[in-house]
Length: 247
Image (cartoon, rainbow, N blue to C red; front, side, top):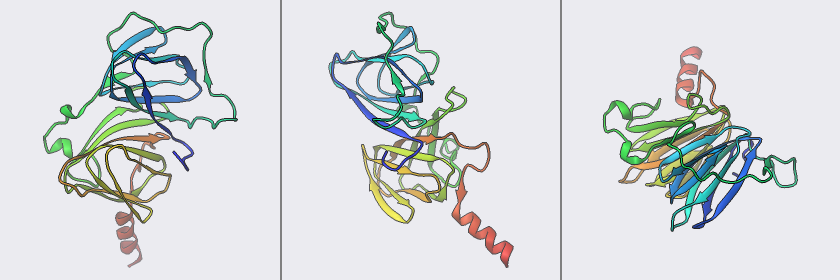
């Protein structure tokens, strides 16, 4: 992402029968499969994965990809700390004589699945985000999952839903899956739809509103991981506090 200092976000596509040889990084990775069928190798195990499957590769974990479907394989990738630019220190390494395992294993470890069919309809499920109503949030990759440098989550805003202006001590990236969202980022208005990417840097004051007639869904990443307290800083709350203190 242009301008970021913590986040490496990528949209990856692999042709049918294509492979990415076993390799490892000096940074952490997360992924969410958008389309297609994959065999993903992690160390000495291989797993069959498809749309809605997600996972994390911890720093130094050997992993590989193979497209085992007839259609292209697409996935969103997140890397943190941010990968080094070309020409700087190496941060990706390919072990000599490594191969992709062929024996498939049941999904385990730092792998999981979430797709829109699993979104609950209860009011409680749509009240998980501070400062917003009719918003559903599903944590996928976080500290509890086993990641140490980033988070990845799934969000849905129902029509009319919004979150007030706020900022964070971490970067966020947003990959829009469906719907149309209005974003206010440091005073600038943006409209984003499917396959668009939005990004907020540390301290960027931002808000989101679903201005369409359909739910807005997106994948969101955090880097670095948020602090244990005071994750959100809502502008209106602090303006009100200032009025109370200074009256």
